[in-house]
Image (cartoon, rainbow, N blue to C red; front, side):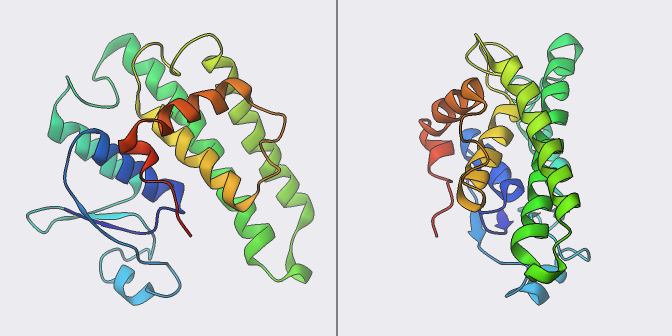
Length: 203
């Protein structure tokens, strides 16, 4: 398998970390959406990362679809999202918050750090950051008093939160200051697992 994208993106990283946690070997091509736009477009007409080139040449795009395919590949006993019932609903609830908060955080980063200063829409950036903080605050409450977001078993939601908070620490280091203590402790536990910690972005 070939993973396309850089691990600065929390969406790329959550795929890479999930593959590593599940023991699935992969090669990574650290393409950026600016410098390697043509290469990415040849794999994904949206020009976005991640993309995953499967062993048979099939190309999967979007981290949600990629991770669903990975879970299907390893089977329900090893899948990072439980297959059925209350455990699945709990994981999906946490994952919806984690993905939503991450999307808002990335959008705020793009608004405030990637635009020329005179074009930044400050009110929109504030709203995006507030939405991200609301999602992480809800997850912080879920994480309080337990090892992982859904109890004693790590799920995809934990990997996604870890990738997102590490992204925040790189691009918006003040965002987590004094906030989300249970979630930050969970992130540290996750990063202590080499399969996850070794995928952290290295500039």
